[in-house]
Structures are given as structure tokens and as C-alpha cells.
Image (cartoon, rainbow, N blue to C red; front, side):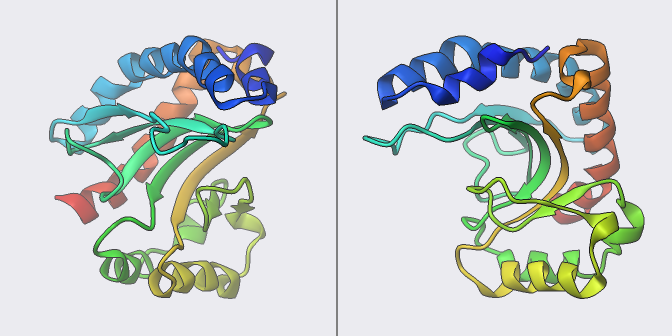
Length: 201
């Protein structure tokens, strides 16, 4: 499903050139992924969901270092809500349930997330605290204190995020197997759906 062509987009210099690569090479893949996993995710959540593809419209000089698709219940936008993501940097693909800093009720959501034993429920998942950076941590390798630190930072620091899901290196064989990758996306979203429902419905 993914080839070196998608990852090579992020080696192209210049905003216009890279954006053209994103539009022609990556965004059609996002639409394909949504067509395959969107109906099941919507059925699992139980309310209408909508696809949003990152436009990077605020950028005027620096080309984006990553790009993504987002799925959420708000047709007008996703950044103020919990949302499901699939996206990529130059060296990895990420599959997240994302809570980013633009959410107006971050503190309340952080308190709810602190009630979830994420390490026990999702030992094979990663978490991250900044959607702008690649850095992510496998929950099975983390202490409870380290997890709490990321969640408290999400609660207390204005620009902090919280993301939970999976990261895959660009050379992972599953990325070249369309059926296997789509099944992994469905599995990731399905396991995270109870959290999304709890916070949205």
C-alpha cells in the first residue's frame, strides 16, 4: 500500500513542490484508506463520521514534515475534538487517536484519560505528547510514572497533545500489504473506539 514514493515526498525541497507531491502521491491513499475503514469505524462509533485531509493551509514558507488524514464526528473540522488519524513522516506511518492542543476542554479530557489504565489495555500501542514530533513511546516499556507525566503535561501545558495508537517504520513489511495494513488500521481504531465514544457521545 505504501511505497518509497510516499516517504520520498518529504525529501523534496520547497513548499510548492512538496505540497504537490502530497496532493498527488499521498492524499489519494488517504481517501482509499477512508473508503475501506470508514464505514466500519462509523458503525462502531454509532454516529456519522467525516474525513478531513490535512491542507497545511497555514504554511507559507516551510514545507510540512508530515501529513495526515483525520476522522471525526464534526463535518466542519477535527482539531477541537478527539479524532482518529492515519499519517506519515519521512520514516514512519502513524495510526492515532489524537487529542491535540487546540481542544477547548483539554483539562477535563485529560482527567478522563487518567482514569483509563492504558498500559494494561494497550501494551502494544505507542503514546506521544506532541503531534509535531516523531517521538513516541511503547506503553509496555513505560512506567506508570512516565505515562502520568505525559498525561499531566497534556492537562497543564497549553501546547501539549496526547496521542495513542501505533507507529510503524517505513520499512515495515505490513505497509506494502494493503489488506494487512487496512486490517491493522481497523484493529487499532476498533480498540480505541470505546475511549472515543466515552469522550464524544
